[in-house]
Amino acid sequence: MDRDFLNTFESMKRRPASISRAAWFEAAHHLSECKDGQGYTHLHGHSFRVELTVSGVPSGPNGWVEDLADIKAALDEIRSKLDHAYLNEIEGLEKPSLERLCAWIAAFTLPRLPRLSAVQVARPSLNETCTLELG
Image 1 (cartoon, rainbow, N blue to C red):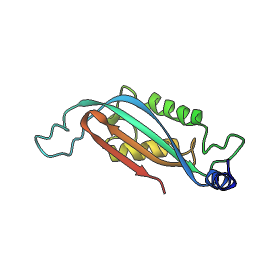
Image 2: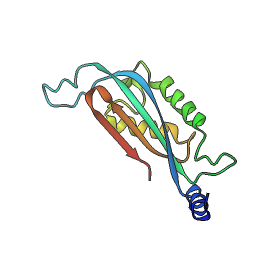
Image 3: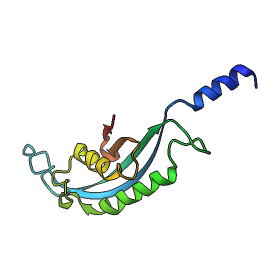
């Protein structure tokens, strides 16, 4: 390798990076304050995909932003609370829109992953996604 490449590589290793990991859960909900005929007011369920993104400058012996196993552990905790749940019965999710679900997941996850930079919740079968950026 030539010196220019090595210098560029060393510089790139010190730049901020983001890593993400995702998981799925199944849950039911309803939204009571919608226009007539939208169908949201009836109890129904979705397959949800949640993705957590952690950002920072890679560091430590492995040059990681975060250990992906720690992100997986956070996702496992989220799944233990939300998988096969009735979202309206979970404190804070009484009106479980995608936006509120992102905010709930962020608040739940931040103590475990303080460098959490984004939460994305999707309902892929409906082509719907919400992303909450955390600064």
